[in-house]
Amino acid sequence: MATLSAVDIEDAGVANMVFGNDTSVIAARPGRRSCCAIFWFTIPDGFYALVTRHGAHVDYIDSTTGQASPVWPCGLHYGPPWLRVSHLVTKQDIVFNAKIDGCHTNDNVTVGIDLSIVLRVTGDEDPRNVVKFVHELTPLGLHAQLQGALETSMRTLVRSLDHTNVLGLRHVNNCSQLEASSEAEPNVDVVADGGASAMDAMKFRLNQQFTTQGIEILNIVVKEITLPIQFQHQLLQKTLLSSRNDVHVMQHKQSMQSLLQEEEVKSLQQTHELEQQKLQKECEYDTMMANLKLHTLHAENARNIQSIETQMSIDVGLVTVENNLTVQRIADESKLETEKIRVQSKAHGEVELAKVESEVGVMLAKSEIQVTKNVAKAENTLRQARSLALATISEQHPENNMIVSFSPRNVMDFGMLLGGGGGGGGGGGSMPCAPTRRGTQSLPDTRTLDRQRVLTIMAERSSGNRD
Image 1 (spheres, rainbow, N blue to C red):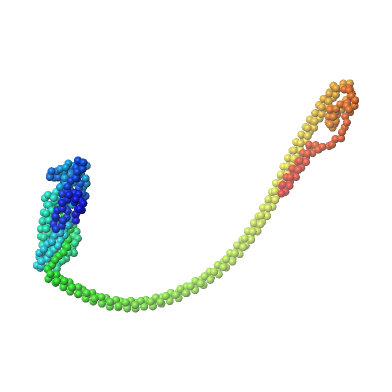
Image 2 (cartoon, rainbow, N blue to C red):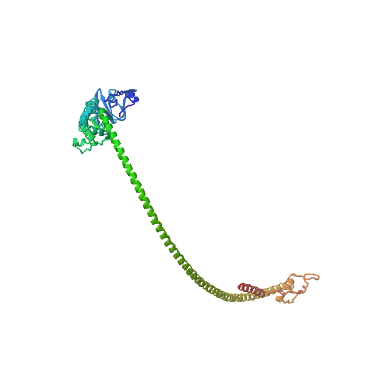
């Protein structure tokens, strides 16, 4: 149902227009506002708006597509002061209530029917339908046409039904829309059944009449059907009698079901007892067979255990013999390997000893050669020293022609001779004292030291090879 709040009516200056028995706002004439010499007007959401200039209708031009439409969209619009909204038509569904009295049924019973029709203005399909509704059809014209069409349709429908079938129309509250492909009007004989097809037929006829005027009928609801008082009493008595009969029938059915249930319970108990006995016998047989299988399994397990123990003892003996053989073989291999290592060590020691002896021989030969060279060099040095000493003595004592002979063993005495003057009185021409021989100590020569060093090295290497 389309309505506006008090704030919307006050802001837009809406004047409600009476439509039928309801005061639904389906068209309004809002006022205008202005601010700072900028004139503007607003269109609320949920309405189709028609705008006029000096009383003449003005189309809305879309700025993006350039198409013209007689309906202006909702929102804020700017324009000159003579541009104003003339009508607002709701987009919501509208409920129209109609009460039809004095409808005669097929058996000449007068009934009264209270209807509610849900309709809407088809401005979304074609905006020109809004102009047709406002200027051509008008709300009052729609009220009159709907009232007349409903009276005609309902009288025709009720005339085809008995007063007992008319009450079935109250249960048809939600009628589906007729398919677009169904072009023919439903047959009156089908309508006489009082089902949903009756309301579909009425809605189909009303849509044929009002679709061209921009109105679509969405649903038809029968709220109440009033019968004469005497018929109401008759129907009430008939309903009560039918209810009593139904109660007796239900009680009889319940008693029969109780008897059948008791018999079924007895039969089920007997069947259950038989099944229990059968199951008990089967369980005893299964227990006996299970015990027999258990004894058989115990015997087989005992045989298997004995066989496993016998095989295990045999396997243990074989493993013990194999282990003894393996230990003996490892001991023999260890002994053989030890003897092999001892022999290899002895051979290696002999080889090393031979190498050391050869090296010692080489070192002895080298040392003898070096000793020979050193002796020759010492003798040569002594000869040169003796010649130099004789020459020096001859120069200092030319009057003494004695010849002094030196030997290599008197090197120390010769040194003392070179360093002394006489101990007796003195003048420069006296004869020098005879050199006094001092006792000499024999020292080990180089060959003896080299031999001792070589023997020490050989002893160390021999002790290392033994270790």
